[in-house]
Image 1 (cartoon, rainbow, N blue to C red):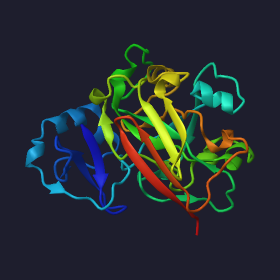
Image 2: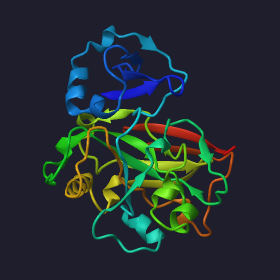
Image 3: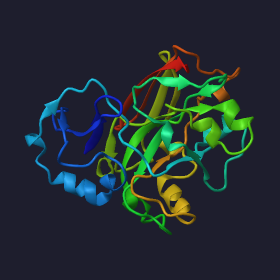
Image 4: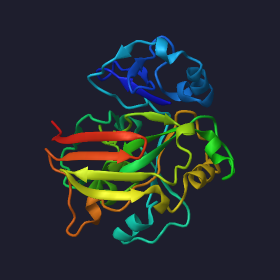
Length: 280
């Protein structure tokens, strides 16, 4: 299933894509997609709904595929070629950090370049949404805890991330720095999360074009590793790292300016398009 949220910002409704590609309104059938409403049990309940009986809608806007998230986790340096372009050694364990949950944004909403930013950067990523509480999970069983997958642009302000001290979260969390969706694609439609192409174009030029097969740590390994240190909760989202081709890695580095357009996609999970604007 492909689940989505549509409507004006702050007034989104839950929806689903039918077999003909139409958007059907799930309002009144399910709660908005967040937390337990995207648990494995909740997704099973949606499968029992007669989708063809629901009204067809033509949305003017698609929102983030999750209304909110308990935690917005990210994995750093998780593609071998990206670590190489950054001039950094491959990690021996997953590098874990957070984005503020307030960074969550619609897949086609404008990306706001923060005040004073000179180094805002793009990162196309595979997103993983947790479907049931996960603690001390084995690698073998890890994918059993996944509700679904989505496309994420893990926007980053490199100076805030690297030069301002403290944790990376400061460079990752500005409003609009977490475009997510357009869909939450349920796990049964993604038989192998390590065989997905992901790409990003900047102003029509392809700058990222890779495969999740280049991940240093697989989705199975990431979930298992994280669950040794914390309990993952239904609705948690994990951005699993970006491939080579970010602005920081270019020679000379290239960063976003107002008016730039990013177009990105993860195979089977839908495309995003954002235009950058200056903060007011």
